[in-house]
Image (tube, rainbow, N blue to C red):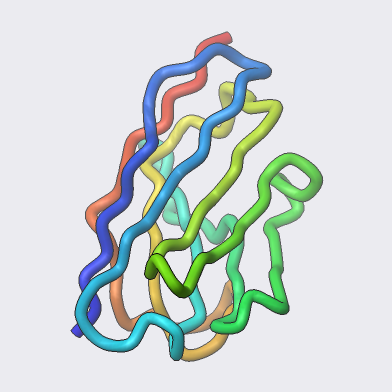
Length: 121
């Protein structure tokens, strides 16, 4: 089992930045690809970004490319999502997930409880 706990969400104005963190515990964190998803009210959950277990490969949704950066620190069992130039349409609950391969179509094995990000215009 891997337990994931997100933090760092909040209410910000458009154009601001936030950094989300996802702390992992339990089984070996290093062996898992990690990803961030989000779900806005009334919408389906969507892929945001993913990173390979080594951190050497990343992938992003088109809607966040150039604004968001995913990274990980395996020594701290933590994955991050740096979000810059936030827009109101980024408002959602953000979830981190752990799985075998980094990518939007991966079936992720473990999920956190989510952290709310609200961007006001």
